[in-house]
Length: 200
Image (tube, rainbow, N blue to C red):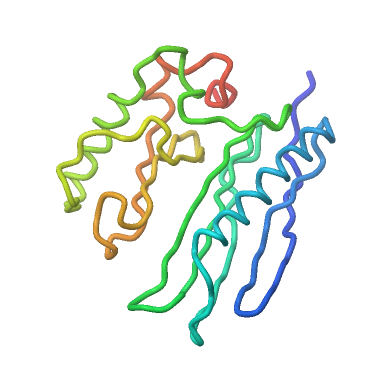
């Protein structure tokens, strides 16, 4: 049996005044074209986060971009790009953008792609998050009702991790909010051809 091997993930370093960036670069996949497709997405995503932080014109401004490898097995590659910047004001801001790929094709999955076509994934995920907010005593700006259909996520440790950016649903003091959900709790609606199914 041919077991898929993990990809090689290395750091490509870029620096400019007041900023240090570490961008993931993948190689070693079965298809060089798939690797190239993933690297293009990761590079563009890194640039988007840089642009989203705004200019570093404040004399005290600084930026640091890193990444976190979440899953790299069974043809599933899930990576979070993390960008911290101080551009003036009371405190800095951290932005996170995650990508989950089928490494055999280089295709990136949206949240809806993880579930059966037409399946209601929003309700069970939102119910889980609402319960977690209550149990963790997190005060949100508004009573939490539902995730967005394209809510930020990554895949790690046989879990789907839904997360919210700073200020998205709660005050800055809470930072980014992460909610892991075991894939086994969602298995009845998981797309048999999607990324989560590869991990069973």
